[in-house]
Length: 88
Image (cartoon, rainbow, N blue to C red; front, side, top):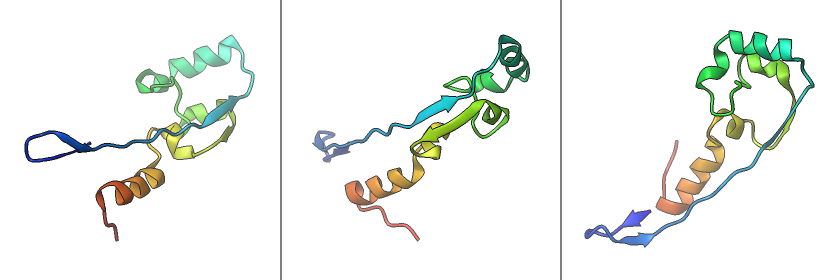
């Protein structure tokens, strides 16, 4: 949201990004072993595709960085358009 000097919204926009993740079938023992690593405890989706959780992932359809938490490339392009962000 872009605001004027009085704090009123003068421009707003946004985007969403969707990525699907396919998992290998895994047993309850494999799930417990993964939970025992404590890795999934601070993850929104309860797995870390960039860590030990990668062994559970069969594939993704979409932006890997969306799965990680933030589609950086898309965000930069959005910000360039929305507020005229310049990058090196």
